[in-house]
Image (cartoon, rainbow over all chains, first blue to last red; front, side):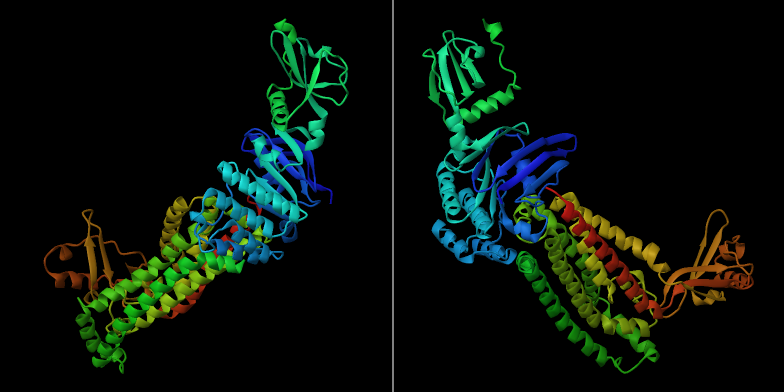
Length: 296
Length: 341
């Protein structure tokens, strides 16, 4: 299976409000995919549609080639750590592992047990008394120990402190390295994804702004700095994502692999955060480039 | 899935078990005393012939702890289904929706249909079992008093197990009430997605059902019987004379163990007797009134469910409540399967 999630014209309406409109995307399997976008971009809605927690209003979505949550077998193939990492507050950590064992035929008890020990969680501790980070770890353990093919995480670390974030990501990375596991993890913070994602999707206003393997994205984008000028003055083949101008110089973030020969321009590589922010900013300004003529 | 349902249900099950044990102890101790008093009064070996002994025994109960337990037993039978609906039914799904744990539960390798059926099945069976055990215990405890009330031909509201008050506290109908209250609570919790409002609405709707059933449905579950007899003012009853010159007389019906649905006095023409009021009855002399009434050739017309209808009505009512419960369970399963976050 090479496609983790395939959405076509996917839309979800709540009352009169559309949480997601006409979303078409393909998420390949075999990657740790970062799904990044501002709040309200439709990330959670998309993931809830992909796990079958929501039914689409329009369009279709397939996960690992089948309709989400269409059968117990299909449920077993997908692990989901929902937003705010829900657990049963009055059940102990050990009870949660028993819960996982009873609810999943493919449950890996030894792995779950060793993870809990590794995390230093007291099996008798009630989940309601765990810290946010521990709760997230418990939820992750439950999702991983059912041995899914695809693990979906919806902003699992948004509410955690930096240390807990790092620990969570370490565990996640270790798990993806051990198992043949595709991962889709959403976040509105690029820094969270930078460490682990090898594939990136920027979602703004239900639209995929850019997607691709992180390395390719970084290699195909660059920052061009030169004398103040209009975008039309740029070397051929460069698609402008964002631009900014001071009195004397202009800076463009462009998508281009063509070498820049004009000595007036200096080309620098971009980091992931700049790249994502550029695409978000572009989408926010409604794709309309600022009219440079007016400034002149 | 059954393990999980049980694990989540365990605290409630322990509470229910403790309450059952406490009730059993109280009923066991007082019940033994009641039976020994009953045997001591010589009532165990007699039947309807023991009217006087029975009346004496009945009078001796006044102010005793037995009377308190007798009515407490009725109260327990009424409260149990309601409490089951409130504390077992309403939170069952509402709590999962409220705390977001359904998102954990629905992403395990178990279909939502099985998830909800396991929860409903376990909770429903436990509800029926608790109501059944309580009904058995309370009925056993009250059996001496019930016999005495029959022997003494009492006409009080608790004298027959067919009267609305007693019917819902005896036999197998309470099993149906418990199942219905549970299913009602679960359904409302699922629809409202909030535990507290679901509990409140469960209580209101269950109470309404328990009022509507005896008032409008149960009398028609079996076609009532009718009895007519010559009106005899000496048998006791009541007489109401209103200002407009209207006069209504009602003679107490005495059909052993029956549930009297209506009791009217009719004229020879078959109409309900409404007067006009006569001066013979407006005066102080009862005799002159009685003899005037005797001259009207009135008849007493009673509509009733005979004592023999107790078990048919009980089973019918159980069937109705179980069918409604199953319907509600179906609604839950169907809704959960298509319900989305």
